[in-house]
Image 1: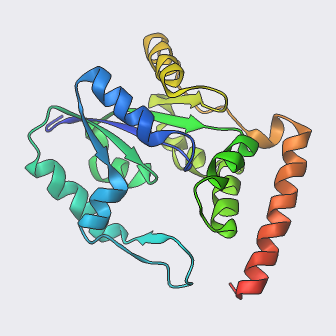
Image 2: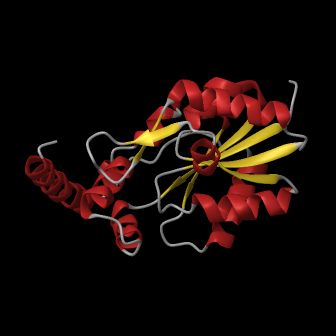
Image 3: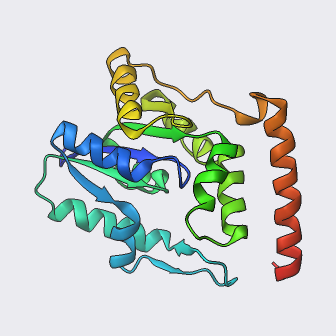
Length: 205
């Protein structure tokens, strides 16, 4: 493997990616990278044409931005906080030593995201993304190097401890499926799906 070692930290917004990534980078002596900032500054994103409050990643440009960044970097290791782990894996998979996947109970996630001042539809989309394991499924091909850590009721430092405990035991794999955990979650998610459908109908999406 040539170039720096990469550790990807991923998960739905609100699961703690940014702060856990910073803590992990500090603990390991690595450089922290916020992937979304890198891609925006590199011109690899565009506004959502539907008018929603979100950005669309232009994948070809994103891969080029990632390649250029790593080729010009001098660090030995990087901890990357990213919503799009497959972009990094498909571009620089041989450099990725570890993937940390953060998970959170959709009901807790709803509380966290509601405090961010986001539009209701954006909150619903992200909570449903976690409920339906969107990012987890994106990583199934690489599950043999994924540390899945639940963050629902934990402070970031405790999450970091869980990461190192799983790393020491090499406890890898993806197993959390919120829809099978608790019937109340299923009822909660069903209500959110219905609400999001109403938003889409009203927006003509």
